[in-house]
Structure formats: structure tokens, C-alpha cells
Length: 330
Picture 1 (cartoon, rainbow, N blue to C red):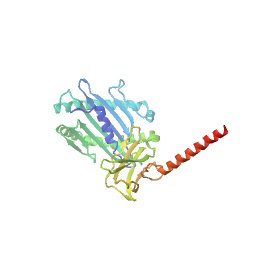
Picture 2 (picture 1 turned 180 degrees about the vertical axis):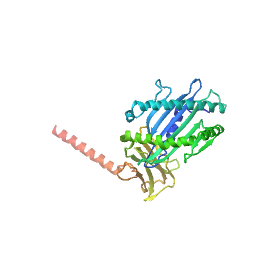
Picture 3 (picture 1 turned 135 degrees about the vertical axis):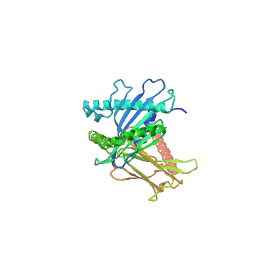
Picture 4 (picture 1 turned 60 degrees about the vertical axis):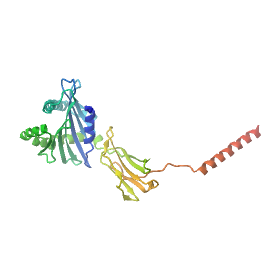
């Protein structure tokens, strides 16, 4: 089986985690990945930090400078001492994760001719009033082993023999307590600091661009899809109603997804009998809207055949009259 590219895997990891929002809250999340591919003498370390869906800083050991760099304009307000501290921390973390990666490769007796990558994700969630809502930590090696900090932030869940052996070390070192302290303290403080620095971007409200599409299925039914595009923040509600009543039968509602430009997109679809499309309405709720929207599919406007024929006849009469007048005048 072909191994997925490490960068594609990181993007997938980001996409999966950035959809887990609580209404009226903000996330700070840090994604670490260590990559060892065939022919590499030294593994490559990458770290990206996100506030909600906005990348605010990043590090790549492959870059010539190998320093933590701002990825959002508002982060350039941080002084040089901040970047020195962040660079020192990420370099220490990279060395630790590189050792863990080598250990996992040896423990699982895997070939050095394959791709190997280790992922680490951690972050904190605060309400709009700044109160702490929760935090998380997850360590994963190539899909075989993982370690998750439980919601109580005091205990671990593991899968795989190597992860189980690592859990013992974590418990003995009091690592859960250390992560709890970080998530409640430094992580939350940094998130609130970023929300202040980038408030024009992070605390804005962009109303969704909406429309309804119509598609006939091979079975002869009709799929109505209600689209919401380019909105921010991520919290949004899309519902379908039939004759004014909530309609969830045959409704498809995927997760909200980042659009790649700092905004989000979402759609909700229902399958309806042909000819009954106008009985269905889509209702959109988002904080960027002055009031909820109600949409329905608008059939394409058609001109009756009789109107076309009348237009052709009138056009012919006008042209004929003009020709006769010109001939008479000449």
C-alpha cells in the first residue's frame, strides 16, 4: 500500500481537528510532526500553531534559519524575546520527538526504507469571556500507537504495546499534571494574548454567502443542497423545513470545513420528490447575519412560447414598416 505524503497527512490532521468547535469559543492548537523518510540522515521537524483556523506561527527544521516565525501579520507585534523563547522551546521539543520516533521505529522493528512519522497535537479552548472550557493532548505514531490525555486532564488512554510502555514513563514522571498545568496556564494565556493582538481578524463576523442548488439523481429524485460559504467564525446552523416543519429525513449534513482562506464552508442536502421542491426551505443561523436567512430553490425563469411568437411577429412588422417607409421616401 502506498504511504501518504507527510505534508498531506499533516493537512488532513489539521482539517480534522479544526472542525471541532464549541459555539462562542476559540481554540489554540499546536501540531507537531516529525518525519523520517528513506535516505534522510536526520528527521525533519515541523510545528504549526493555529488560533481557530488561522495559522499564527510556524517552525520547520528544513528551513535555513530553523527558527519560529510569525505566520500572521498581527504576530509581528511580539518582541524579539518572544521569538527567541519560542525557538528554544521548539528545538528542545524537536529533539525529544526525534528520539521518540527512533524508539518507535526500533520497537516496531520497521524498515528504515519506509516513511515514518510521529504526530503530536495539543491545545486549549476558551469561551468568549476568557473562561477555560477544556484542553487536549494526543500523540500518534503512524496509526499504530497513540496516547491521549483524557478529558479530566489527569489520566491517559493508550493503544499499542509501545504506547503502553511509554504510558508508564508518563505516569511516573507526572506528565499528566504537567500538561494540565500547561493547558490551564500558559496555553490559555497565549490564546487570550493572540485574541487581543489579532482581534480585528479573530473576533470578526463574516456573514455567509448562501444559495441553493438543484440536482436530479439517477433514480429520478431531486437533491436540494443549501450552501453557506466564506463565513467566520465557524459556528453555523443549517436546517431544512418542509411546509414549515423541521425535516431531517434523508438530510445530509457534513462537518464545517475550513475554506483555506481563513473562512469556513458548509452545506446541508435533502432528497425530495420531483415537483415538490418549492415546499422545502433552508434556514441559516450565523452571528454575522442581522437575522436568520430563509432560502428556497428558485426555478429558472422561462419565457412562454406564445410570448416568443408574439415577439417575433411584432419584430417582423416593425422591420417591414421601416423598409416600406425607406422605399417610399426614396
